[in-house]
Every structure is written in structure tokens, then in C-alpha cells.
Image (cartoon, rainbow, N blue to C red):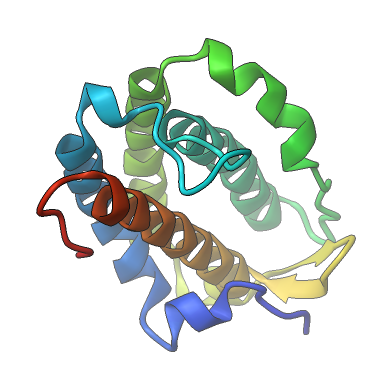
Length: 167
């Protein structure tokens, strides 16, 4: 089976639980950053908070589609996407729109996860870059991806907000 490039973020924790808890953590850091924090980034040339939120919304769409195709189609072959080719539109989209979109999609995905059978978790797909993966690994990739970006957002808050600390 293929590997999860975000496994270090998941660190053996239950991915479905992490995915369910993520929206509150994301909303918390975004609230701490406020509207004035939307254009902050870790360094020049790095994505802003707003761009990260748009990226999370886009990835939720892509990951959701992969989840559903894996559950619906035997031998599903996932399509890759290049995040850098999607990103040029992010500066024209408000971070709040990205956040609201992400939160709505994630709520729907949590409903799906809550209704899976044990055999659903073991369904497999082929990822063009990672090889054969289980549905479980797809969910773990999503959870790790979430935590990677949460770390970036917390680092931005810690670096840019007076008295802020990483949570």
C-alpha cells in the first residue's frame, strides 16, 4: 500500500476524530487573526491566511470527490491536481468565503464518515503518485493535510499577533 505524506502530523491518532475536530480549531485561529490577519503570511512569497483558507476549500472539494469515488467505484484511479495551478485565483477570493465553503463541505464529509462500514474503510484506490491506497489512508492524508495548515496558521498568529501563542 502507498504512503501518507502527512503521517507525521496524524501521529497514529484517529483520523476521523481529527477531521471532526478540525473545523473548530480552524475557526478559532481564524477568529484570533481577524479580518486584519487575512493578508498575513509566514514570509514573503508564502501563502497568506486568506490563500490558505481558499486552498483548504479547494482541497476539501478534491478530497471529497476522491472519497466518494473510492466508495462508489471498484478500482478507482484518482486524478492528481497541482495546487500551484489552482492558487493564482486565490488573491481574488475573500478568505471568509474560503472558510465558509470549507466548513460546509467538511460538515458534509463528517456525516459521510459517521456512516461508513468497516469494509468501506478498507476499500482501495490507485493514486498516480502514491500507488495503491486504502480509504482509511485517504482520510489520514486529509487529517494530516489539515494539521499541516493549522500549524502554519498558528505560526502566523504567533508571529504576527501581540501576545498570541501557538495552540
